[in-house]
Image (tube, rainbow, N blue to C red; front, side, top):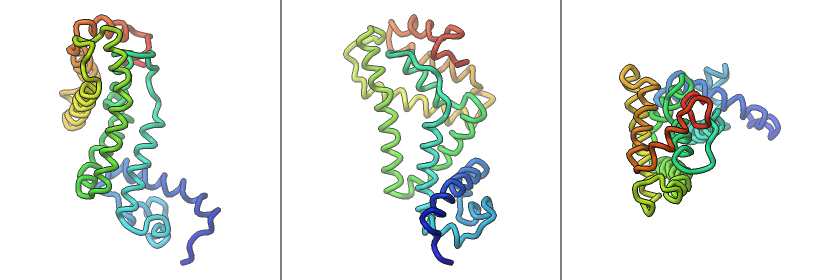
Length: 218
């Protein structure tokens, strides 16, 4: 079977990506195979191999697609700076809605495959570094705004702690959703952020008022 012409290749790339996403949503990374993607497209594995000559290429594309879908999801309005902005960023990560839960289940299912491949593991580490980099400036601002117990606290370390707390909560909520419904997750995140300093609780209280940016209903 000859390879697709350049125009046809680009035209089919969206279809391929949609099929990959459909398999991820249904089966997670454990069920992501060339055969499953071909079936979702009503096509053949031979056709798919023009796009993904190896299973690793398919997984790498799926991870990139997942990162892109995560970046494109609807997000809460973010206050300009400080802990209320950190709160909005972290609320967007938690599995508070069915769509958020489905996306997080796919992410968690990808970890085993990434850990088994040094290159994929490095790419995943880069994704988490970018997330910490997103959070860090807002924690630096929180220090300047006297929202932290220690205005000179290491923002990089605080960002790592915030991301670690949030992802730990993600895992617990996915495996035990009855114990960790949306309101419990939100309250736990607020308690974590309030623990960062004596100035945190009052500022976060404002962000929790209904209708204000950063509220859980946003």
